Image (tube, rainbow, N blue to C red; front, side, top):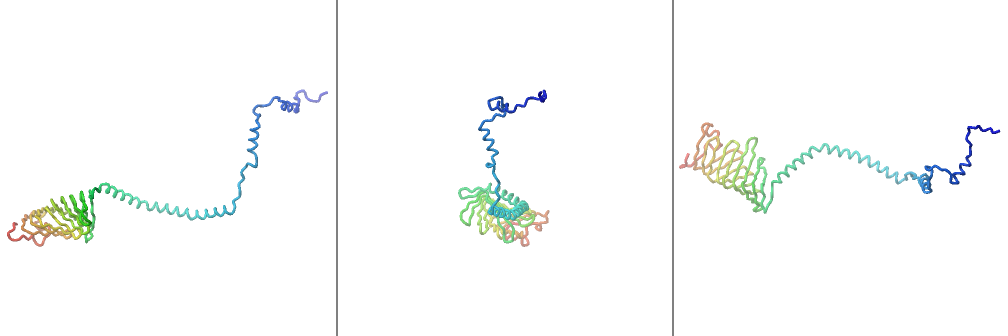
Length: 272
């Protein structure tokens, strides 16, 4: 009698192993070549796994030095960044001023010993600023500069200034003397206008002198005379005859005109 149940399948493990060794049935997904087996085993080889080494004394000393440097470098970097943020408005203003200067310099050209759109700035002996400009300036000597269409502008205070133009001029830079010729026109902030063929201006001391005929118009009236001297700083105009004076009585006569010693003195024989 057989005690094995009829439903139990026969267990013949040795037979299956024998069939596999002898070329029996085998699953294709389990089939591996010798190269694949060697490669997979090399991955799990413990000898090929990189092991982390403990730092030695030199590595520890270097790391401690880096940490000590970082304690100083990082706060200093933060201070530099904060300082740059605080100084940025001043830097921005300097950049804007630099751009304005470069824009002005772009209009200035130097050509064959002459400079176009030249500008000379200075301060007189009482601290009043003045400026001399010209469409063209030619350096004749270390002291002399010949100007074409020169213009001189002196600021005496709020709302008080003198402006002079001419066709030609000579500027003695270190002495701050300006000699004007041809169609000289002077305009003062009080409305006084003067015309003359020539005029000499001492920009440092604020004095304008002309030995040629003068035609002047202003709130005081009309004045034609042989020569004049104008003290820019004091606002005093002195004339010498012969000359002709027509007072504007609607504006208070000579009281509102340019200041002079009493009235303009004209020698005998001159016209009044």
